[in-house]
Length: 374
View 1 (cartoon, rainbow, N blue to C red):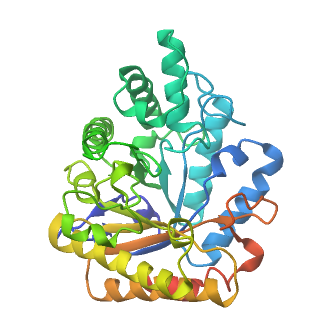
View 2 (cartoon, helix red, strand yellow):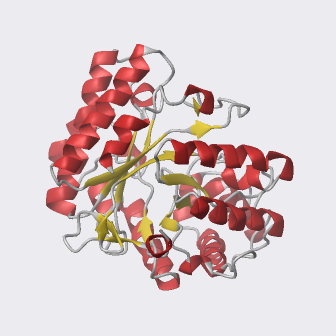
């Protein structure tokens, strides 16, 4: 186990799959975004441990979580530009240890397009204050604002060079970290060309690789299709061109090791009936798997998918997703893993209406089906 845990997750020679210590690595995982901030509170650490235990007991092997929290947010890691809360950093140190003890690996998100946990909007606020201009929190400014990028790249350097206060191991050398995710769901609203986001992803991924050549890097994309694949625009859940995303271009940089997609039919198609949502889910996964397998030649991970509670309706959605994932894994296609959204301790509020609580296992998480990917 130790030799396996000490090996980094890598892309296989065929470019389509993951491997660890020369063995194929297919994974089933879960999202739990709040582990950093809850772990920084000694009174809440038991909740973090219970989530980790539940993930392990379900047979899942990867957790996607945030490695950032900015500004005036509760337990912020970076309360102000370049200033870091050591107690919160030690929470991440501790999380890496506890994840390793359970054989878990982490996909760590580095910022957020949305306002939750600070993210890009907070960087823009900092830039406005530093430059003495009227304040705004429009996330789209983040990508081309040199001040934002200086602060963000300093954060990346600080994070990758961080030495774990318990183990003495730099983060860049810790294989418990499976991958860095440049952002969560990056968009650039209003940029129909898709160039702003694609350029930022390429430049930032190359910069991160210069800091850390051990870990995989992904963009954190939702998967919206753009002008690079005009024949596939019909597969978008709605007219997404204004989001500034272009799946093919967003993942074309050599510094991006694998592609990501999200799957949110309840949010993206609120007026569709359940049959149409299930049809879309299968088509969405198939379309991106085909692009990754035959065009990008990179692994694909479904890093978010969720369904609002609803008994048989929710179960049918998970069954459709898992069966489609299993089909592609068995066929040797580029789809290599997934993380359902989002597992949480029973005491954590259901902020978005998609939470999978520990008390619901295994019926809602259905680990038996999900873990057949492994």
